[in-house]
Length: 194
Image (cartoon, rainbow, N blue to C red; front, side, top):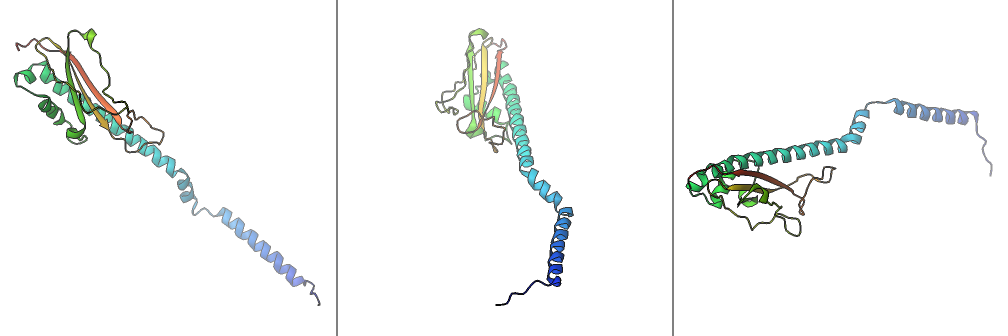
């Protein structure tokens, strides 16, 4: 068999192909048309995680403030004696609170209200109504609004669902991954005659 020796044309073509490949690679390196899309794809996940964490936190804070306001406003009915003289029950008192929590809360299924009287402010002992799994208890809440001059503590609890969790903003405190919202109002009833 006879082997053919490379001709000068073959060498020239090989150098030309290498040069063309080098030029193509250099041109690709200088091409900026997709740079923005590539850069955004690198920062998209942390960006959206931050946005979801901000919205999650903002909604939880807004819900907590809404619950605090509703409890403070409704507790005034007890403080002034309107709840006692009009015969409000635990359910109707809860409904008054729920009337102010229309849009953000599933009030009938998730709000728990505890109203208790104490002989002095120093004897008030409060604990969270959690079961052994760190979930909100659904029973054992009292409704004793007291008489004129009594010390009363009104508390409301709600398990706020956390939509996005695990993005570095883990502020849940219940066993099921929800956030316990608690609102408290402590006061001495006005000296009404009842």
